[in-house]
Length: 88
Image 1 (tube, rainbow, N blue to C red):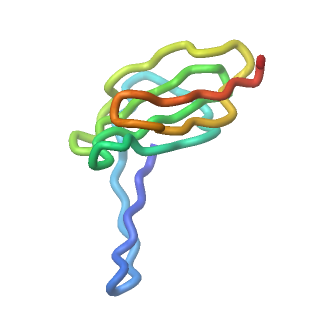
Image 2 (cartoon, rainbow, N blue to C red; image 1 turned 90 degrees about the horizontal axis):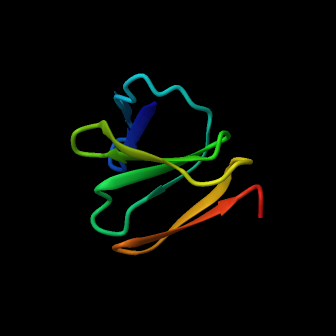
C-alpha cells in the first residue's frame, strides 16, 4: 500500500510505502482514526478490516468483518468505527 502526502505550500506530493507483511488485498475504502490520525483503516473486497499505524507505517491488525466485502468505513469517535458490508 502507498500513502501519499501533499504539501499545501508548494504542491509537491511525496509517498511512503506501508508494510502490509504477507497480506495481499484489494482495498475498497479508507478512513483515518479520530485521534490525531494515528491509524488508517482499510476495507477489502474479501471482507477484511485492516488497520495500519501511520507513524510506523505497518500493519496493526486485521479482522474478518463480513463475507461480501466492506463497502464503507467511518470513524465515529476515538474508540469506535462503523463498517458497512456488502452482505447487509
